[in-house]
Amino acid sequence: MTHGISRRAFLGGVAGAALGGAASPGWARAPETSLRPVARSDDFRKRIQPPAEALIERAALDGEVGFAVARLHSGEVLETHSPDVSLPPASVAKALTAGYALDVLGPAHHFVTRVIATGPVKDGVVQGDLVLAGGGDPTLDTDALAGLAAAVSAAGVTGLTGGLKVWGGALPSLIGIDASQPDHVGYNPSVSGLNLNYNRVHFEWRKAGSDYTVTMQARSAAHRPDVRVARMDLIDRSLPVYTYEDKLGRDNWTVARGALGDGGARWLPIKKPEAYAGEVFQTLLAAQGIKTGKPEIAAGLPGGDELARHESPPLRVILRDMLKWSTNLTAEVVGLAASVARSGAVPASLQASAAEMNAWAQEKLGVGGLALVDHSGLGDQSRVSAMQMMGCLRGLRMKMGIKPLLKDMPLRDSRYQVIENAPLKVRAKTGTLNFVSGLAGFVDLPDGTELVFAIFAADMPRRDALTKAQRERPEGGRSWNSRAKILQQGLIGRWGVLYESDPV
Image (cartoon, rainbow, N blue to C red; front, side, top):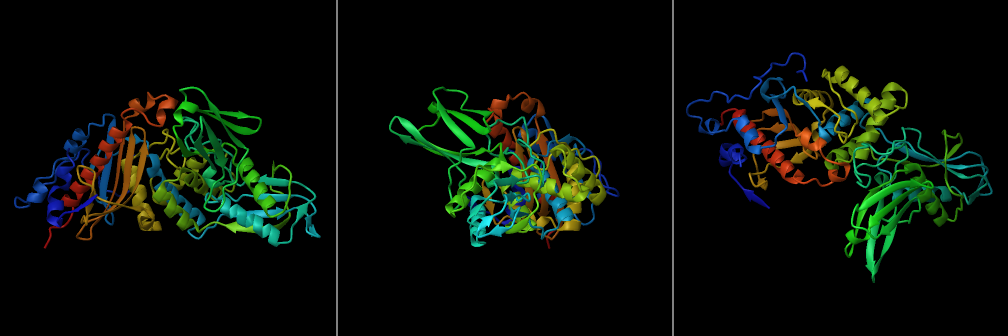
């Protein structure tokens, strides 16, 4: 729902309605507490703005809140609250990852997936192995694999003397991004140099009499092949809803029959991405009349002739979509790929790759002391202060043009409904974990002033008290997050009033 509001009414009341690290070198520091700037006696709009501390108190988030806001071009810090307290950035970290990838890989970078024949093709038969070689593409889907299979057939291949091999060694093979997450959440997939469908499998169930029909598919827009590398069994129990076991080289899932209702579907994470991609490619080759044995994982990249290739969209497009949809796999893959290009070696872990990105931020943006442990922000061990993130974003805006890649964020009122035609324009990245919320980006004021800001809030004792099973939908989590978002809107509305030039 949207509703209109005049510019004067908005500027006069949005912040009030919402009541229901080290700085970069050369930055002027604001007071450690957020003091209301002295306003002219006749400037009613500014005089009625509540102090930031009142907004924070009304939000009742417990834990800690930190924010910093500055003028973009001059770097003048306007207002802060606990700006040097390091908190988990959640998905706000993806904005930094985007800048890292843009700088190291370049906006026109493409990820390439290839099909290689290790021997010559004679009378349609490959004299050796057929290799599906991943290049780290985070966007590869079943439709793209079908295109590769069709290209192999178009090259005249009808069979092979060897086997079907898959290789994903361009990036480290990691079972999940964050080990503290529940096994079944699709936003915590495995990571590899060969990724398919964001390393998720589509689990669907339909009521059939007194039982259910179940499918596990590598579903995309035009194809939905069944898979065997992931299997689902229905069990008569109440809880837990899902269990996972790595058994016989497969992802073995069970689900509580009583939780299924009449039918539904969800994406489950794949723990064996290379085997998953290989099995789907085998099925798609068979549809082209090319029979192969069970795919095997190659320890190293085999040599040979390229028969087919698939190129991803350019990196700038991938990053725009990553920031819009906040896809964790994409963030980890582009961050890892940048670390490979920057260091010349495949990182041993996400932590090692994130350390490379932290060092890059010090070198290129002049912001030291970052302590990120991954590229997506999913791991709650990452730490960054509001002042550090604001400094990073200012550097990314001035040097790399990050702002157009960020999502337009509508201004909202105290009921969290969109304010139509709001005079403030915000481009930012959100970040959400259980009892962790962040927002960082840029605000364009009506007079042309541009602000850069970062807001973080976290109740870590409450988050740390959650069991692994509680982390998908914890009690009180939604309410806490809603209050954090209302606080963010209130602060932005306040800044829009206080820091614009006096209207003519």
